[in-house]
Length: 190
Image (cartoon, rainbow, N blue to C red; front, side, top):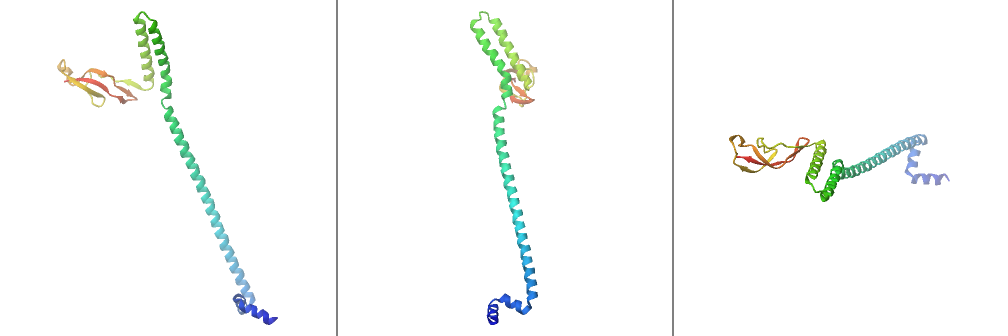
C-alpha cells in the first residue's frame, strides 16, 4: 500500500513538492497562497460591487436628467402657447364694448353718441395697452430719426424750419418697454 501511495504521490507534482519541502512548510505556504488568493478575490468582488453601484448611480442620474429635459421642453411649449394670455384677457372687455357699439349703430339715428362711444372704447384700449408697457411715438414736428422713423417720402418743406423734420405721420410708431416694436411711417420735409 505504501508503494501505491508513493506512486500516486509521484504523479501529483504538488504532493512531491510537499514531500520534498516537508509537509508543514507546504501546508503553511498553501494556506498563505489561499489567503492571498481569497484577498485578491474579495478585492475584485469589492471593485465589481463599486463599479455596479457607480453604473447604477450613473444610469439613475442620466434617467433623471432626461426626464428633467423632457419636462422643461413641455413647460416651455405650454408657456409659449400661453405667453400672450394676460394681454388677450385684458383686451376681452374692449372686444365686448365693440360688439355693443356695433349693435347700437344698427338702431342709432344720431351719429354723435355712437362716435362718442367709439372714442371711449379707443381710450379704454389705449389705457390697457399702456398698462402693458405700450407707448405711442410722437413724431410730427420732431427731427427725422432713422432709428425710430421710416421715411415714406420727402416733400418740399413749407418753411426753412421744417427741413429735415417730420411733417406728417402716415402710421403711428409704438414702443414696448422703450423698445421699438413698430416704426412710425412718416413724411419728411426736404
